[in-house]
Length: 121
Picture 1 (tube, one colour):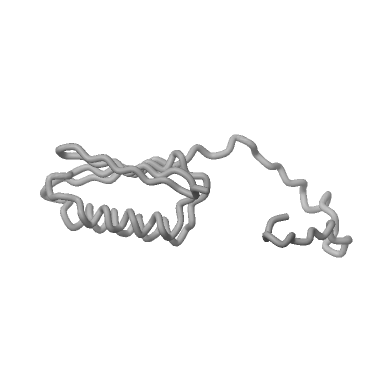
Picture 2: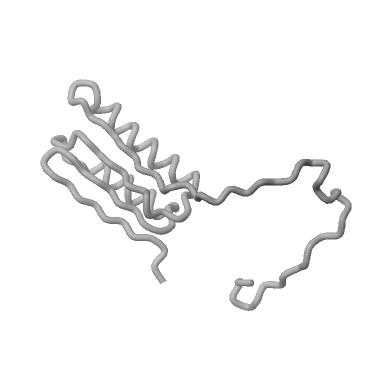
């Protein structure tokens, strides 16, 4: 079972990192190492997250910091830039009823689901 895939491509002055699947700690570590190894000739980095189904906030903060550091360290004279493309938001919108129409907090809880031996419901 594959949880994520990362692909990287670079040209003479630009590089793109593609991530598909789950964006977690392992993905963040790999992106950090890859950004640290970029040659000085690279002035544009694009992070394409359009294929990501879940973004771990802590992992994303790590990647955002390393990309910001790369840009700021070499940015002003060389004109380095970072572009991030995020997944499209779900088009489904959930509308919650007003507080007066919601069941009270003392109502009976919903059904209880027991976990199977594998940890799934």
